[in-house]
Length: 311
Image (cartoon, one colour):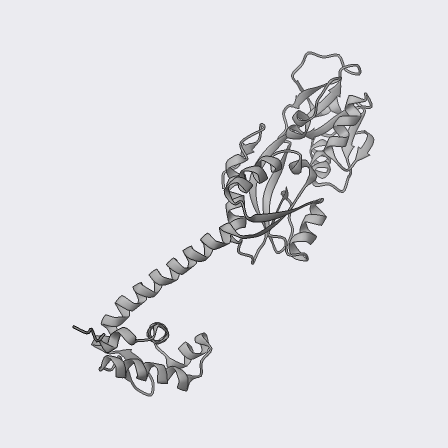
């Protein structure tokens, strides 16, 4: 027996979409504006759907558009169906985007020395066809990469920059790396007042960490004397190893170095930490691949002595 499909099976999905939009907006004009059609075109779509179904779906007046009983019944089912279809299509697109695509990351050198390698290695195992570009930069460079060059996300110090969202990721305490030849001590910690009496190796005054140090010193009524200033924490550690002074750096940076002539002291009685954050433009939605990389980053952020912050 030959099967003749019921005419309802030939209804175009676009007609259902138009119907749901008019029902939600309760206006042909507003629905037309949202869909990009003219009002007459939207009205024609609804008339076509009503003709195919053999029943009116709206009671039209000069002031109001109200659904008929049949329209109400169709709307409940159609709205749910359209949401399910949209979700399924989005899932398919996300799955495709996780198999192919590209992610641009910009991060501070201090973080690049830490967990970035493990992040990329794990992500590459899972998303084998996603290409990755990485740029090291100061906070000014991170801001430029995100706002001007269109990078997906950045990893850097927590600062106050308009139009960027900072999601706290890890909190890294600041420690003192001291040359054992310069300071003979078995203590495990040192005060900010004691540090003020020593030749210090400090980051440049333009850095957020240096500004935090100076603010705490001012609060304690002391002044930190910088023997030398550098822009990278790893350079400070190298100078401490050479016996040139005491370096004040994030703990993760200090522990990544192979210390031979120096030791690490905690700084007591002050909350001195560098907070790293995931940085994104305020109005930007991450791609599926970038979102997955951020998820891996968060899961890895508890390693190497780092502490995951509560979101």
